[in-house]
Length: 346
Image (cartoon, rainbow, N blue to C red; front, side, top):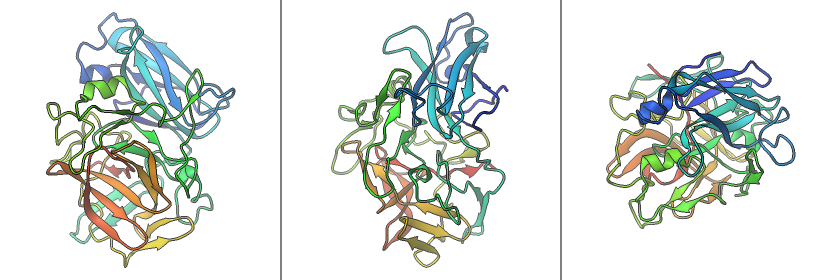
């Protein structure tokens, strides 16, 4: 089935293959794939071991990859495996460091976000429709007995990037999760790098979707260089979905107003597993973060951080909570890796 242009696709395990238009790469770089360019398909990573510590095979979440057509009118064909999980696949041209022209998050899950959406009218009398789980989560909260598994955590994102990063192999400690390429096992921690003082361009991150670019400063920190920085990386006002938005078609990163009215009184803290629950918007795991200063997973089972698409000065607004506090309009450095809870486009 041919898919719409997006950065994330939801597919069910053992379902029919999907066809991803490679022309998405040309929305970023008009010369990425020419009319007659020979392109390939590559698994960047999967969080499911398909066998022999590789991420590609029927026992994983991605059974196989293929290509169809040629040039910028062609497609990557993705065959879902039998297990739920997350993967990133890419269109490539040639070999070497610049081979990746664009990449996509494949969210293999039986979850249908339109079947049980969370509808919330905030205290500003604005109504939003939200997913009932974090982007990339296999299980949601509420009465689901599996809400305390690592599969409920979802994925982490640096602000303004389309590329996901696994959270943890545990819901109670900061255990780096193994991920699997077509050639073997690795971790995000093994692939992170210092961004050299904020000098990383968006083009560099497009070519390196598995690299978490961290930067330590005492105040402002961004993975992106100031020369290519933009407050509209995730859309911002008037909240038109951007090229880099990580949510599936029909959904987007929320603005900062979504969680207005979430307080410690109505956003109740849960100890086992750690998180907060709101009657209308659901359960939010304390999924921690990846630090802007070292790229490591921290705060698991203690704190929750959720990005909005809205910048504020050199930072961006977030929903933050721990066992004592809940803030619907906090702000943080954009080099951090936080969770995303998608909202339906209007």
